[in-house]
Length: 110
Image 1 (cartoon, helix red, strand yellow):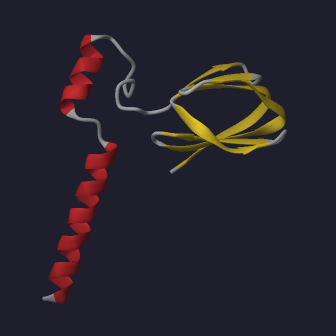
Image 2 (cartoon, one colour):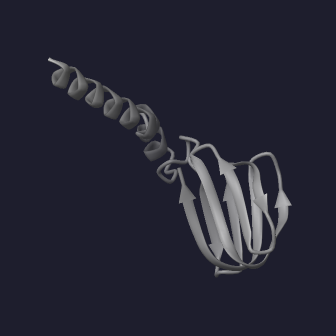
């Protein structure tokens, strides 16, 4: 009996996680109708790169770490970490950030 309750609880948690990460059907329809990129209305972070020297991040909520080698930014969908050398933030607004320098990697941390 205990094993059945454990499996049921696992299924419920998995369904809840899927619900939190999966955009609603209505949101997806609106994005398609307006010809927006997937995730544009769901609060997901959006990054545009210019080579490996500039990244524009839409959906930034704040700075978690900042130095010349690492910049970690909070977003509505998690944390994004830029690593490289001579990294600087040339712009920061309520929702956007611009990271410049030699970007070697970008990591998406839940």
